[in-house]
Amino acid sequence: MPVSVSFYGNFTMNARTKENFTYLQDRWSNFNQLIITRRFSPKLSLQVAPSVSHYNVVENTMRNDMIAIAFGGRYKISPGTAIIVDYTQPITKFLQDNPHPGISVGVEFATSAHAFQLFATNYNGLVAQKNIMFNQNDFLKGDILIGFNITRVYNF
Image (cartoon, rainbow, N blue to C red; front, side, top):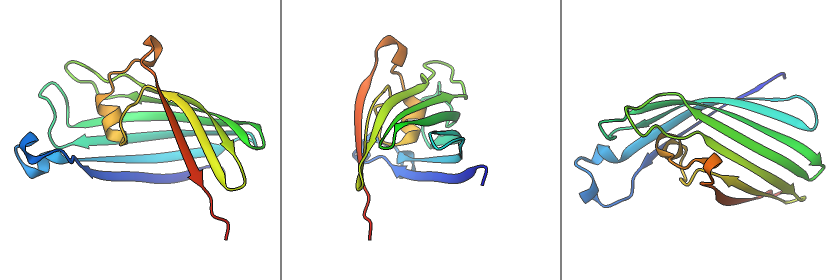
């Protein structure tokens, strides 16, 4: 198949105390993304992923919806090691405090049962819509955070 297409979505509820919100529905946000990928060779895979983030309540200088597009890639430098990159560009503009693009670069190590990712990024949230809507960290000015993921594969 020339490309793979996947959909990713989430629906979240802010867990802060109810005193932080006027109405229950003020806590809700969601994220929808279409992920289009292609493996160009055994070593190189690339993706493009348009998305829409939505918050029910935002500051009056912001919009409730944010359209963004992400570009990512993975290049294998050995059978068990790869370089990974991601760039996410917010498209929707606010009246002030527009979010910075998301930039991530890292390395992935794989064993027969685990995959480890070590990366540098300017995102600090756990859910995509928070990162895309509110990111004020500028990767190019040194606002960098370090991340680590581990995945366990069970071969039955």
